[in-house]
Length: 586
Image (tube, rainbow, N blue to C red):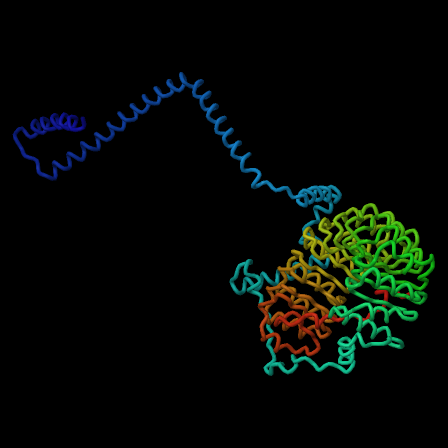
C-alpha cells in the first residue's frame, strides 16, 4: 500500500517537472534521494493520521463490546475472586497450626502498656523525651551528644560511626606490671583456715572461736561441699550467738532435729539456713526452733532462702517465737502466700527493717500491699522476680512508705515502666541502693528521674538493660561522685562516653561490673582503672576484646580484676564482713 501511494505521488511531480523544464531532463542521485525523503516524511504524517483513526475506531468498538458484556464479566470476576479467596483460606487454615504461637507475656505487655499510658497524665507524655526536659540531666545529655557530634564533624564521620570516632588517650606503662599481677602469698590465717577445712572431721570443739572465724570456716566448708552433721553439731554446741550456713542442701530432717533439740537458742541473734528445703518443714519446728512463744528472744535476723516446705502456719510459729525480728529473708519460699506477709505485719509492724520475698511466686503483690503499708520502719524491700509487681504497686507502696526506704530490689520485675522510676525519684529521697536489672521496658528517661530525685545513691545495678551510652554517661556526670558500686553487666550500649564519665566523676567507686560490655577498648579500661583510685574490684567476664595491653599496662595496683584469662572466679568471691543490718543498728 505504501509503495503504491509513493508511485502515485511521484507521477504528478514528474509531470510538473516536465512542464516547468519544457523538455526531458534526468535527475541526479542527490535530487532523487532528497525527493524520496520528502515523500516518506509526508507519508509518515498521513500514516499517523490513518493509524489514529483506526485506533479510535477500535476503541469505540471495544467500548460498545464492554458495555454489552459488563454485567456478565463482573459476575465472573466475583466468582473467580471468591474461589481464590476460599482456596487461600483453606491453605491458611492448614498451615496455621505450624506458625501460630500464643505468647501470654506479649499479651500482658500490651495490656500493661495500655494501662500505663492511661495512668500517665498527658503532661508526662509530652515530657517523655529526655531532650525536651529542662534541668541538669538534659543539659548533660546535650553536652555529651554535642561533643560526639563535633568530633564526628572534625573527623568527617557520620553519626553512626560515633563509637569509632571517639578516641581516648591513654598510654600504658612502659614497664609492664607482670610482677604486680602475680598473686600475693596467702596470709598465715588463710593457710590455717585451709588446713582446718581439709581436716574438718578432726575438729573437736569450736569453743572460744570468734564468730568471724566461724563464718569463714562455714563459708569455705560450704563452697568445698565438706560441711557435714559433725561440724554442724559443733556450731550448735553450748549457746551460740550466730549460725550462718549459706547451703543446707546436705542436711536431712533427722540431723536437723537432733542438732537443734539440744541447742540453747536463748542468745541466738542471727540464724541463716539457706537452701534448707530438704530438712526444714512445719512439723519439725515445735521440737527445734519454735518450742515456745518466746524461745528465740534475741533473734533479730532470720534467713530461710529456699525453704520450699515452709507454709504460712510454720512462719506464724516462728514469728511468735522471735518477737525481736528485724530482718527476714524468705526468698524462694514457694508455699508462702499473702497471709504470711500479713502475719509479719501484724506481729512486727513497728520493728521490721528488712524484708526479702524474692521469687515467692504464690505471693500476689497487690494482695500484700495493705500489709506492707503497715511496716512503719521498713528500710529494705526486695520483690525481685515477682511477676505481679506493677507500676500501681510501686506507686501505692512508695507513696505510703517511700520516705524510709533505703534499698529497693526490683530485678526481673518486667512489668515496670519509667513511671515507677518517676515515683521512686519523687518519694525515696534517702534511697542508697537500687537494683533494676533485666527490666526491658525501662528507657533513658529513667536516668533523668534518678539523677534529679535520688541524689544519695551509692549502689546501682542496671544489668541486662537497653540503656544508651549517652544516658548512662549523663547520669554519671551528675551522680557519679556518690556511687560506690555500679553494675553494667550485659548493657550492650555501654561505650566510650560512659568510660569518660566514669574516669571524670566516679573517683569513689569501689566495685565496677563491666562484664559483656564489648564496646570498651583497652584504652577505655585503662583510663577507668587509672582514674578511679578507690576501685578495688573490676569484673570483666565476657570481655574478650580486652588484651594484655590493659591487663599489664594499668597503674592501679590495688584493683582486683575478675573474669579475664579464664581464672577461677570462686577464689575472688569474698563474703563482706558486715553486721546483721545494712543501714540501721539494733
